[in-house]
Length: 101
Ligand code: SF4
Image 1 (spheres, rainbow, N blue to C red):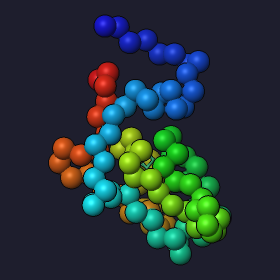
Image 2 (cartoon, rainbow, N blue to C red; image 1 turned 120 degrees about the vertical axis):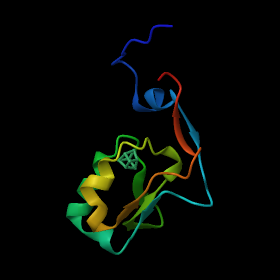
Image 3 (cartoon, protein in one colour; image 1 turned 135 degrees about the horizontal axis):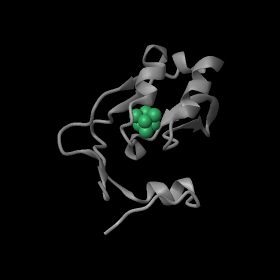
């Protein structure tokens, strides 16, 4: 099978190509809401390609993380680890599984 890039795909379509083995008891992405209230940090969170970070619908000043969708690219770890993002690799066997590579 040959996989070719398709720039016409939407983000959800691209993300469909991945499979996840979530570990609800041990989320590998956590946020410190108090630190994430700064405007600078909130901008940093927009760089997540999987839209893991979103505003809390009950309190828009808070940011919440949906660790189940993480692609493990490490971008947020580099960009915001000192500002309220705690990220570690998922426990063995859990996390993202790429279907095509
Ligand atoms: Fe998003 Fe990448 Fe951070 Fe996962 S590691 S939450 S995909 S920026």
